[in-house]
Length: 76
Image (cartoon, rainbow, N blue to C red; front, side):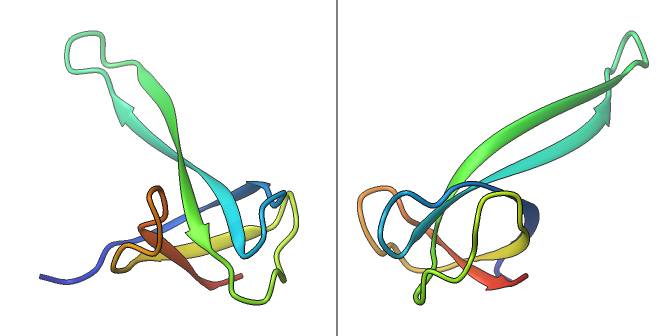
């Protein structure tokens, strides 16, 4: 099974080698047909602490790195 790749914005880099990435998805409501925006936060591994708040990054699934980290930053 291929690994998922998501694109989002870094919202926090307070922890060492970790960034929090907010990923937004848009979809139409099944009944109302109104476009809805939902966002979810993922904690991703950032080996060199090179990403800052506001950066647009792509993250990819990986084996668990810690209790909460299941993603790693692929590129900016």
